[in-house]
Each structure stands twice: as C-alpha cells, then as structure tokens.
Image 1: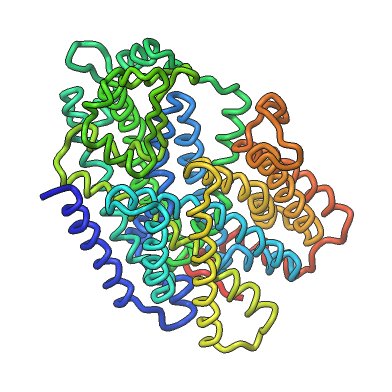
Image 2 (image 1 turned 180 degrees about the vertical axis):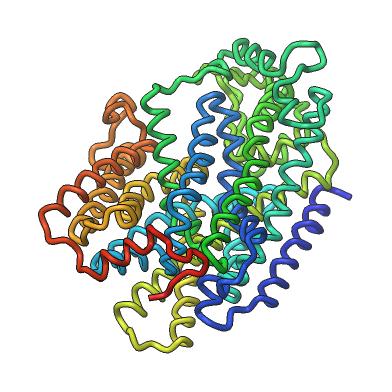
Amino acid sequence: MTVQTWTFVIVGLTFALYILIAIWAKAASTKDFYVAGGGVSPLANGMATAADWMSAASFISMAGLISFMGYDGAVYLMGWTGGYVLLALLLAPYLRKFGKFTVPDFIGDRYYSNIARTVAVICAIIVSFTYVAGQMRGVGVVFARFLEVPVETGVYIGMIMVLFYATLGGMKGITYTQVAQYCILIFAFMVPAFFISFQLTGNMLPQLGFGGKVADGTYLLDKLDGLHRELGFAAYTEGSKSMIDVFAITLALMVGTAGLPHVIVRFFTVKKVSDARKSAGWALLFIAILYTTAPAIATFARTNLIQTVSEQPYASVPEWFSNWEETGLIVFEDKNDDGVIQYVGNQEKNELTIDRDIMVLANPEIANLPGWIIALVAAGGLAAALSTAAGLLLVISASISHDLIKKQIKPDISEKGELLWARIGSVLAVVVAGYFGINPPGFVAAVVALAFGLAAASFFPAIILGIFDKRMNKEGAVAGMVVGILLMLFYMMKFKLGLFGGGTKEEWWFGISPEGFGSIAMLINFIISFGISRFYPAPPEDVQEMVESIRYPRGAGAATHH
C-alpha cells in the first residue's frame, strides 16, 4: 500500500475512535462539561494531562527546534519539564482544595472582585488564543503533506474535528479522547525512534543511540559536529545564547507552565486532593518518555537530512523531498544554476529553505522506513495537536460561559442556558483559532513559547500570592496582572511583529529575547502587586480565613466547597 493509503486508513481509524468516545461521553451537566464530573482516576488523568501538555509544539516542533538550534534548543526541554514539576508541587493541590472550575474563578473569588475576574478572563483568552494558533498550524502542516491538500484545507478539517468532540462531550469527552490520543501519540513518536536509532547506531533505545557510535566508529554527535563544520553551520553541541537569555527563557517557560489555564483545569477532574498529586506524578512519567527521546530524534533527523540532501544533484533527489516540496515547506532555489543542492551555513550561498516544523514528520521518510510507520507519525502529530487544541477551546468557552455570563452578566441563568453558552463559546473560539492557524505569527514552537511568556507575566504572581500571602488584596492583584500582560504584549509586538518602531536583537532589553521576556514582566508584576497591596486595606476576614484553610489542609481528603 502507498503511504497515502496507509495514512487514510490509520488517521481514519483514530478519528473514528475519537468520535465514538465523544458520543459515548456526551456531557449532560455543566459539571460534566467543565470538569468531567470530577470522577476521573489518577492514572487516566495522568495520561490525559500528558496528552494535553504535549501539544504539537512538543510532538512536531520541539525536536525540529533542537534539530536546527542544537544545544540552544535544550532550553525548551528544561523549561517545560521543570515547569511541570513546579505546577505539581506548588499549585495543583492548593487549587484543587479550593474546588473551582477555572483560573478566573479562583482569582475572582480570592480577590473578591469582578474586575479581577474580568481581567483574568481577558488574560486567559489572550494566552489560550496565542497557544491554540500554534496547534492549528500543526494540524495544517500534517494534513498538507499526508492528505496532499493545501495547509488551509488542513486547518479547516482540524477545526471541524475538534469542534465536534469538544462541544459535544466537553471535559468528559476530551478527557477520554486524550487518553486515547496519548497512547497513539507516544506509540507514533517512539516506533520510528527505535528503528532509526538501530539503523544509525545499532542501539534499539534512542536514549542510548544518542550517545552511541555510528558505523564508522565515530560518536554520533561528533559526526554531526563534523558535518556542521564542513557546511559552515554553528557547531551542534555548542550554544550561542547568552547565559542570561537561557536563564530567562527557562524561567519564563517554567512559571508560564504553572500558570497555564488548560493544564491547571486538569487537576479539578479527580475526586480528591491526593489524587491530584498522584495524577501529576503519572503525567510526569508519561511526559518524560517523550522528552528524553526528543533530543535523540532531533540528532538522527539532522544527520540523515544533511547526508541525503547536501551536494546532491537536484535531478536525483529522493521521493520524500519532492513530496514535501509540493507543500511549500521545503524550498530549493538554484542560485548558481549548477543543478546541485548547496545546503550551507552561509545565507548568501545557501539554496535550501526548510520549515523546522517538518523534521519529526519527515524523519521516517528520510530514513526510508515502511509506509505504515510514516502514516503512524502523521496520526501521532494530529493526536498531539488536537488534544491540546481541545483543552484550550474548553478554557476559552468556560471563560465566556462560566466567568463572564454566569458569574457577572446573568447570575440566574439556568444550567441548560449555561451549557448552551459554553457550546457557543467553543464555536467562536474554533473560528478565531482557525484564522490564526492559517495566518500564524512564526512557526509553532515560537508562538507557543510566547503564550508561556504571557501566562508567566499575568497569572503566575496572582495565583502564588493568592495562595501564600493572605495580606494580598484585589488592588494589588489587578494592577500587577494588567501591567504584566501589557508589558509582555508591548515587548512581543515591538520585537516580534516590528510595531512601535520595531527593534533588532542588539536592542533587546537586558539582552533578553521576546521568548524569555515573560520572566522580567513576571518580576515587575510581583513587585507592583506586592507594593500596591500594602497601600490599601487588607482583604475581608472571610477571605483571609479561606486562604488559611487552603494552605493548611485539615482532613485533606475531600475538597471543601464554599
């Protein structure tokens, strides 16, 4: 069978599975829709969290980033893994004890103010849209290559798919779909890694192959460094970023993780506080499987790519090359008209432009693996992108229906009415997400890194101070969130989109890139929140008591409801 036939079969089967799960888990109440009825087991929730967590950025882009950036790409590994640990230890159990559905709900009640709630809703929507744009782009890239349709059509197919199971099943449908998606995604990531690791180094385990020797007896990484030098690229195993920038990006990704609304919501779907801790532990194990394999895959793909295309006559390029060329994600421009591909570090002489997002997807094709493995990777990439997109759409729809309409505009709305608004919110969110997927600002992982910066700049200080500082009041929290998110948006627009007079790398403040600036905006948010809260009266007694009770869990079994 051809690769395309295999893709139709495997992707078709996985889609049928998601649709069946959505129909089986149709949400009947708002509790089902927002938190899956609160009865998911820690193991299933751990898998669902891992699928929610490992978006198209982890599956498709992260190895692609490491593949092109080499050592510098490691900041994404450190930041995202570290952030997950921070979330599991510092925030999840306390928020679960508080027993709210959404982050704006926590902020609105903790800071006893609808203004704080509205600011949190706006921040949640900005963060989620920035993030979901990257997912939709990932879906488009996969469909473009494997169903041989334009990227735009791919985005439309993805929109319809997510809309179906997110609006029908809500969190209940999404949770069980994500369990299935995790299994597909991890299988799809690991199978080609085993094969290619064995092909290149004779070691089945990619983690061992990464440090192993190739056929001619040199170490794989030394060989890749040598290839890089010959072609004039920067050495693969040495970094070019300044220490302060590496630190800032890692920190922004870590605390941004801990403030991501769609991951925090996952901890409300279990029965009790101890289950929230257990599911965090399971999720970390499931995430580690993919994260320890990514650097190996990046290295294998980079080595194979350079060896297959560099200095090859264009007339005899392998089939995978022409297939990807049709999607426009690989572009060859013959600058010296000799019909030979010059893939070199010197930009003026380089004739090959490769989209970083294709490295993981093209990897099995470059290595000549069988058709069913190539199709499996396509299904895995879709599972990764769709699982996160669904989680994010739920955050956006819950912000609209629960935090704006039920809590502020129309408090006496019926359960049925609220559910209807949640579904309308999902539809609006999908349309906007689709637009961003077709006109994305930059490649997937960079867009996602900015979403983490926004979450770090806005939510993290408000949540941390809300749990650990009972003197923290609404004036401080609102001022901090507003200044933090505006500062981060300004920096992003100036240095990423060229607005406000634009700016070059040399003009970065403190030498920190837009991806790392979230950590500076977060520090300023902390200083402002803390400072301003001391000029205004302390929160009411009942709020202070509530903060005490979250921190010192008496009978920490079941969550208490106020």
